Image (cartoon, rainbow, N blue to C red; front, side, top):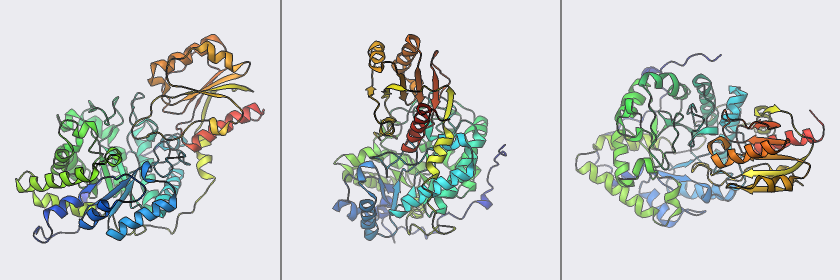
Length: 515
């Protein structure tokens, strides 16, 4: 059993507070300070001239996305160019392992994700996996990994978190949150625990709506906050905000704009002294009605230090204009008295702590890569209910839409089950046609979060009703729903390359008569 997590006294917080500043903004222009708080994206495989210019002028740095990445050598050259422009630039990435990957966006992550690590429930394995992830991103010049996700996924229908979570038990999530932070930062990369104060109890995605968590502060302390307390105790250098509304804490505001959430709760009561990083400000829940420049001002006033403009800004051709407009809005807010120069200076100082030499914080020497470990953990995570068939006649892939955070990353069983026909289905489909194509072999249906999509549930239920020999493979978050009459139900707790290979190996072993 995991012990209860207690709040961290401010006196025991790791020394990640910014160095004292002179509070003299005459030495550094307001524009430079404003730029230092910004972490946007850019399109392409190398930094455009305007991106390098802005870094030299003080821009905090850049976040890298799947469209910025071809291979490790190219990424290393990209980050080197940014660091040549200014050595302490922040270079960030969302490399969670599992379903959310940027380095392996074209092929899928080789690591099992948090849900698989949580179900195996060995924090030392979690630390070792995250140490290898940290080594991967450090090797290409990344200074800040926007991971781990430490939300407690208490709602099966959650469309934003799911397998990104270590589980539904706060103490289990807390133990793995601390292990993940230790692993990443032991490899010399700053960790960023997200999404504060907890995105796990929502049924909406903040990319498209403003989710509401209707919980008292007492419930937050019992359910949402233990993993953040554990991450802070482990020395996490950054915490990312959530664009969610918790009426008992934030009132009508999203947490990203709430001083009660960020200053009173996170800074004072939890004693966090590192950098507060906003989730992507282009998300509907943050800037949908007010625009990114105004969202940035409100975020700084509330206590954020480093402001992300997620991947959608980088895809377009207007990223430079958005950055300039945002910096100008921040300067104007200081000049109008809405935002104090001291608050801006403090934010810029904290943001700067996330750049600099990649390996400066590494402990215990270089990470020892264990190429067998990720697949071994993924195999240990697989859960089987029922019995498996000796032959497969048809694979049916249910293409339910991924979340924006996951994106269009390759996934599924097909690469690992050669010689078996696979039909991809993304809408209601005639079950009789599938049965005819399967012949005498079993039908293996696989998908992600099938229980959240009525058409997918209905198709599986009808297949199971019409004949025996249907195997359902849930590669998303396994809910309580089970189709009546299924021969077997397999939960992989993720759809990464490692998770997919683990399930395929199980099916192959059954066909070969092996246990």
